[in-house]
Length: 146
Image (cartoon, rainbow, N blue to C red):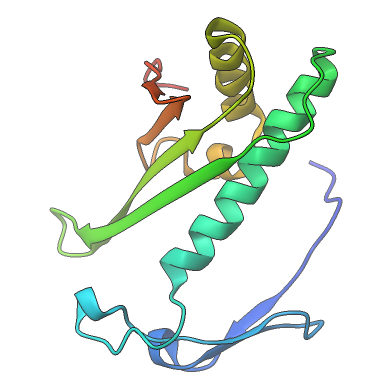
């Protein structure tokens, strides 16, 4: 793989500290969410993951649409990220991506399935997190390797 871009971020004290990118474009306080016993007064890693995944997946849809010569100027994606204990004594994430497209259902669904193959976040979690996809309120059925 040829790397096109690299960035760095440093967290100082885990979930109750700060996180900052090497270029200072992002600097945020972090706190545990109230649901996990924290104050909920600052952002948390799951919110950051949701923001990154939704932006990346939206861009993957737009990229695939351009490749398929489909006129699309927006691809709203809402990423819902959950965290909870796993059976091995650690923690695991859940992901659900809800996409809204102003396209005919079959075309919209095919576009999203293809974007799921292209998106770097989807490729990064493949085999580790079952990602649930929906388009215009309809759940997509994916093959296990999707």
